[in-house]
Image 1 (cartoon, rainbow, N blue to C red):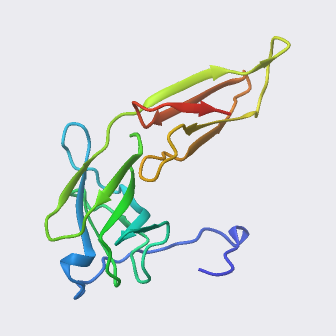
Image 2: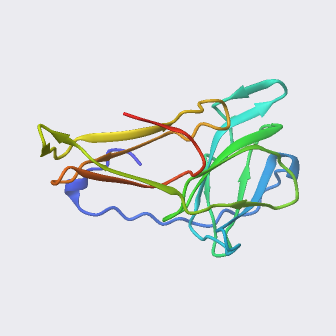
Length: 178
């Protein structure tokens, strides 16, 4: 889309199901996103963090690679690439659950399961001279910044009473607060 002006009213977009292609399984990642109870998660967003080809890992996938996929009603998705690759690191997001990062995901004809869990929460209050501070930006970033493990950062603003809540952070990780 080009030159979208929100003052001109709502924008309507219609997504159409992709038609079958002749891209081989060796250039396709098939997956199913599930919650901790192994129930499918429709409308989860699956995106590519990095791609490995041979000994080289890049944050850019090969040309002609799907930038992301949205799971269907069965939690299933397909990511395809016109270029060859050995593995991808994927980020999977679903409403109300912690973001999942999955490293070394190999292409092929077998559908792999990606399980998302409830995340950890961080809550607090920002005060200055014992008075709450409103609209202060609070963030956390994963301490482990290695390829395939980096969770990214999570940012929120304090409420009028100085309180904040960062919900559904990926669990069992160390974070740095800023």
